[in-house]
Length: 416
Ligand SMILES: Cc1ncc(COP(=O)(O)O)c(C=O)c1O
Image 1: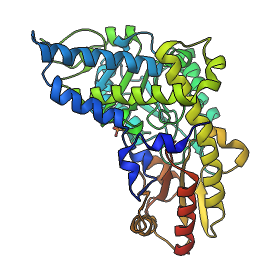
Image 2: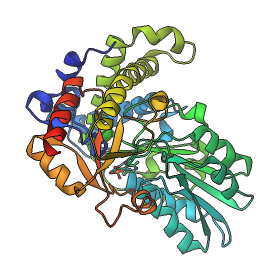
Image 3: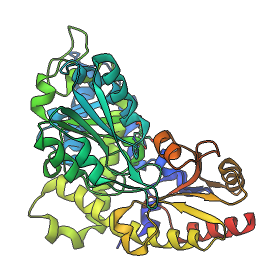
Image 4: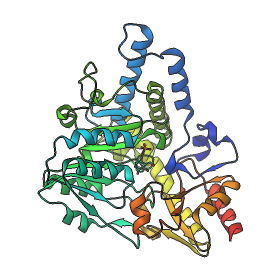
């Protein structure tokens, strides 16, 4: 079992009194990340492609990071990894390339459970190309995606199905394997937003068979950087919006302009942190994983399995704590037997309180939570919460503890 004190010792920011429950907005960084960023800026700070030491060293670090991210996602090749400023920018970017392949009358499928970064790019593609957008709903009572509706919205005109892996608003994990199957049945591409899934569970793009998958390193203990996976033949065949002298190589050709090399180096540091975690706390998962993975891929999967196991406990006690507070309503899965179907991101409303007032009061107690719609606009609209200021979001990761949940309980009781 994961030793949370050892884990926390890797995060300099966690030394103080603050409780970071704002993790779905961004996590704190591991010291391996800081070391990598500092080393990069001192020893190899140079632009790409030069005939001298620092530039060669910089290019080698980017290549190593690309391989590490391919290992993290179990991509077949590092050329399937694209770095960019964040998930939103990468999605708008690649959506332009995908738009060129579409015709008027083609259809795109989006869901109301998604963050707007996996909705707006497709709405704009549809507007630009005369395509139709079909929306998939979610069930209000437990905020789970209506898979029947997903199946009904997909037809032979569908070209892209955009689905989130886990909701940033209510924590629901979606059956994206099924979504990919449904998309492929009609020859459509599946675009998976894994931003909120990546910090919590192992990802295997080959097992999912998704065409694209996006995530953000700053949500899984790294610096501000976005990562896109795309199948090699798609990245190869799509036209990249790029300058002529830049590389035409899949992966790289979508990395417009000079990248944040220090963030890419820091993301390699995040992978090194997870590798340490997997090797230290993931021994019991080796037998079930070693048939499919080896080397760094195995260590990273061990890490995510250990994280998943530890978070299930946090999930239980946070649910119990929040459920015990009178007048508090959790939006999403609340059945303790179904916690495997959600990540430990809980959003709630509290009778008599505006969400920003709750977040402000908790902030004064040094407990950092989010309020509003967190850009999951379609979720708060569907739940009728947009005019009331959305919800309060408490989002945990594996460096959070039971005692932090107890402190939240005390602070919430004082609010009542
Ligand atoms: C589910 C989800 N998708 C996309 C995004 C956008 O990510 P980025 O900030 O990297 O653009 C977020 C950010 O919170 C998110 O939670």
